[in-house]
Figure (cartoon, rainbow, N blue to C red):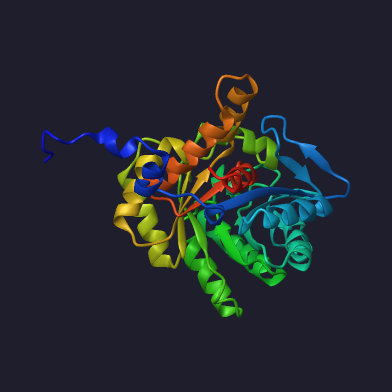
Length: 326
Ligand SMILES: [Zn+2]
């Protein structure tokens, strides 16, 4: 295919040439910043395994939301740490639940920032699972009803987009129908379509206080060994009405991201999860890697693999580095 005169280095020789032939770009518009909203006031507690990430009460969330908006990041995704947890995750769909109040506060103070909400029950159940427990396992259909109720209550509080992360079957259709029936047909659904049962979620569970109290999540999250199943999961969510589909975690599943990019003409998000963040932060703190360089290379990797949107705890740093002209 190439003549013997081909020299790859010719076009790499000058920074201006490298800029001209760069295939993948990264912008603050690609980023979504996750935040953990805690019940109470005056709370700003750093997650020990996630340096720079905090559990915060609403006034601090609002202050950080202003900072995020000022950096040009278009959206945050919210996770809640409620006052009390119970078997059915009541705070998740309470009119004045932690997330509902957080949405109202952000939309009042920073109306230009898009508020996406994580829709799941694990942060609100005392057993830490993503749904209602029956006979020792999560009951799919009973859970789906509550998830639809939760998504509706987020929309009623002012959420701009809802993002179900539970991995129950049929939840996108139920959420879509409930939103449509209640005057929220304009609210998009970003589904965690392809979510693997992953060890990389460890630090998040400390941050969101959502560790399962028994068993694990393998009866609803995907087996890390499976690739074709990801296409089935994505297809199901698209048919049920998802507007954006997501792959989670990110780095160990770049092949899946590329598969979905090749298969579907849908906006595609990736969740650069807590364990991926903690590994970089830990190595950087030890001086083993150059944090900025490794983070930016990671972000480009997601974009190159096909992601349109990157949910990442590095978002604020990335936006700052982009302004610095990387
Ligand atoms: Zn969950």
